Length: 430
Image 1 (tube, one colour):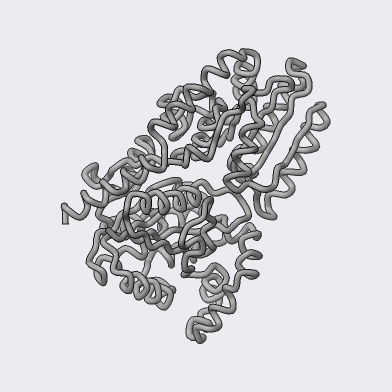
Image 2 (cartoon, rainbow, N blue to C red; image 1 turned 120 degrees about the vertical axis):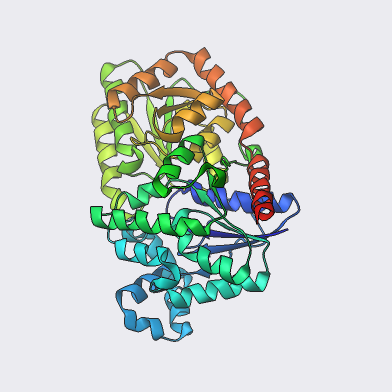
């Protein structure tokens, strides 16, 4: 079976769990004997492991897309102009700019993309459909529902099932201004009719998006994220406690709780319970995140702690980073649909502490790999972290439980099998 994977890239500037998921999915499907044609939109899809299409073709290049939207006269420019604008150096520069990966300021472009053939990117859509037609896929998989503007033309021109993973799209849409937010959800509800099967990554997100998009249960199939479990291993000497090390793995920004974690660590330091406590961050960010990183350094340093920002965060780098931790937390106040970073930590035998919000609750309760705490509270986070750091045997026990659960139920092989079954189901229903 030939499966076309259409994914939105975020570039190499910060850790993107969705991008890691998409590249891992392509490799796992190939391992199961399928032909996989991967394509990236906006920015390059950064793969965690070598693959035949480590640099998949890029469509809707971020620089030319933005400029053509802002200056409609450029839409009639020759194709070589677009290729020039989307040269790798310019794309790398674009990925470093906050505006290319954050919704505010991109509302008009978001709505235009969602409208597909009725939006302002008709030429780009034609190029993508022509490429997909040339590979003759048996099914097309969209990595998130912000790509639904493509679905109608895929169904009409290729006559194959369209499947769409659902993971954290609400974060982008809900950050838009009220009028734009309402318009975006309305267009998504209309375009959702063009998808044969939606694949939310957790049961919680299935319920959440079914309500937002008015999707019946018959068009939903939960396919959890999976990771290459063999890429992560536990420390032979066990978790470090002298001194203890608290880690954070995600884009280092306020929305993901990076500042909240610093507040919790300051509380722990002020209470004097864990001398020498260390705080390590990795995951990168954009220029807009630099001031927060500086603030974190100053606050923790004044409290007598030590902060380290680890810059390389490829898969092997993450494995080494996780092996240095006693506990990991990414305290996103509103929660997320899933949390790939939790799988990576638990696969390394590292227990986690997460807010009781979104899909975090489901994942932590299913794996028994950590503790849950009240969302958005530095004091609650500090208390949960202290609970683990002061009970070494419990921390080790949770780490072992999480590791065993991830290996059994959250591997890339399990994820690929879930997508394969969903494709078969969509093809039969057609």
